[in-house]
Image (cartoon, rainbow over all chains, first blue to last red; front, side, top):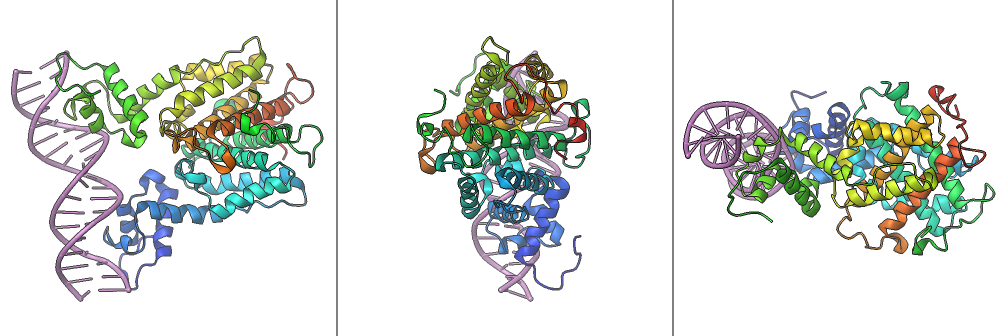
Length: 210
Length: 210
DNA sequence: ACCTGAACACCGTTCAAGT
DNA sequence: ACCTGAACACCGTTCAAGT
């Protein structure tokens, strides 16, 4: 919705919103500073009054999208169900912005804020993982889901398109999320199913299995 | 190693080799058609005689790198050990070319050739996975390792740099690979440890757990 | 067959100038 | 305070021309 005649000033929020619209409609490669300005009906340099540069804009965009995911909180139904909710919500939110996942996965801490990073580690500690395993588990889950989002970016505008053997995007991500959960349980809570300390924590700094 | 005076013709292999050198040294963002030509001591348009366009060059580059990984073959020591070897080899090969993983993860079939795609699915079928689970498992393993490679791209030139709590890149990838293996075993071979058909195969096309 | 040189349509961004 | 306009240093790529 570009406005042909502007009465009042631009705002930073409008710039970010225009950027989100462009990524949603054309993918991250369609996000150019010139396109954002055109979308807002101003000259290419006008948006620079509200942001530092393109990296800054992408940071703001990522913050907005990540904030729209459900937070990772340890619910009454256990860490498995809580983690599943978080990962599926993250996948759904980011899948709407093709290319953003592949961009974030290369950023420090995958584009999450330090607070959300701490929350993620705390989540696994509260679930009974050792401090080391909590960090490794959080990184593992986050890496997988961002990888999956990146793979899906190509088909973002046709998520229901069947692929190999009629499998669709949600089959892949659901299989992956369940595998992540089972893998974490097997590695960090090998005997029972709740609260056991992981067998990895002690030898982790020397490397696993070798 | 740019050559200042050229006696003989360029070759396609030289162009690909120069591109690989550039990605290795400057990352994928350092790979420009003009830089490749400069590296070879020719004019910007000279390389276009040997390749179609930049996408074509990237395809050739990816083929070369992927061919340098150990192939995925079911060894005597079981699918777990075979998969571990393959994933670690892929990680090591691609980690040398920062940004290439994040590029490939967005390509159809993650940049692998159709033959390697079939080999991967066959691998899991031979290991006792149902046809559907074999596809899902192969996609899951590939997605994770490419995600991990993308995350590591940023620190490609200092892989031994300690991160949170002294954990290094190899701790993360080894934890992830073990989790992937345990997750696949738990989901697809829930009871014993060899050859059982997965419990997911029948309901997979209707979605898991729901 | 192999390569050059000029040119085009894009980028992000700087900088001075307008209101 | 907010925005314009011209310009710069990059891209990938086309196209005609040289040897």
